[in-house]
Length: 264
Length: 296
Image 1 (cartoon, one colour):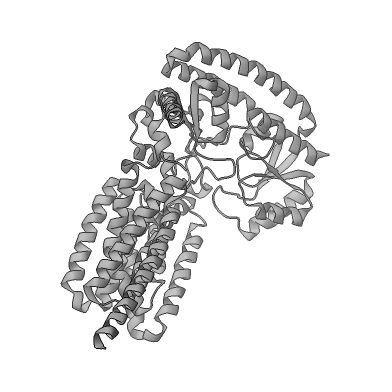
Image 2: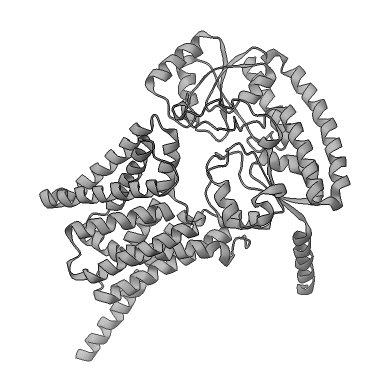
């Protein structure tokens, strides 16, 4: 047990980052699940990383806004490519996404053969550590999330094709750098999976609750048990998802019983 | 009974709050601090010998430790560049953010392999020279002196204490250095292949020679052409051993050992890297014993 790390000023920014990521990923995750393209986040993240490596390959500054733009542009290009493959070969979208993922990942390795500093960036891009969140970046991501949520709300009836892939690409690029690819995957898929079968706004509310509970429990546990925060949160998210699923099915059964009783 | 516990807890709390706290990035500096600071300071070490200090996982306790520290002691020379700046920024502790509370061992000595020009094509090189200098006893002694002076400056109440302990440590360290040098005489002139370029200080001290590296450019995986040359060089030059640190993946070294018949030797590299390396003295004892065992 270790109570030293249990300080709001340490866990607070990380928690805020998690909630920001959840804000866009919970609704996007439901789309991802409905389309059956689970690994799209890995592919987009890897393509964004490839964009950064390419930018550095052509001599762009390591720090600074240029790298962010390169990541965003690469992710959007990846999104556009996936929109096109989705139209052209809708039945093979998932295997195409998988292929794109390995191509982007190994393409990075080939380019990095001569640029070792890119490897640090590649790691940063994929393993982003939630405790190291930078307040400036948090403000930027908050702004981006607000815009993305507004667009999602505005086009909620027609969130498909190019618009979905573009929104997704931008959200993933920002969140992967903030919290890393494992947490992004978990934030997208676990709340959506745990609430599958629930309809409408209720599903969103439950999914947000699962996500928030998972992040808070994970950060507190990682402080108390002195374990890496990102990995811990993935496990608490899964735990919260299972608990929610069990509670929902218990309630569902009760209601069935009540409904049957009412009919008699 | 409960009252006793509460009293104990309170005592413990005041003791902890009152003690001069030091955060060491690597276990070798934790061990050095223990030699010089003794009971006067409380030491927290951020990493272990069994992990790669270039990269570490973020844990809440790390930030808490840096937040409470009066002094942080790290290797420097960009070794911790991947995480120390974020850690210090996140901890928001002005005492250790810069100035006297921010002690970099690399500032106290001259580093080797300082590049004259910074060229990306040469791999993940450190602009301030090779940061793996903990295996040179002379540099360790120089760092110990600077560290004692820094402790005395920041915690003047114990200044005499630090000086006495430094004197005691210097005497024992210089005697041990003589012993190690005598013992290691048969290693002079022997050739080794290394995994990462982290042994240059040890090899220079013992008069040994590095004839190749599994990572030709630091941080970049080797190509097949490089490995082919490395196998030839290792086979043809009466190589003593293939050196790797306790935290490194044994696969590349084992592969080369299998190809060439030259033994791969795992050295502790830092305090805690094996059972014998319990402190700085044990670290050097174990390193030299293992090298001598390979030479037999």
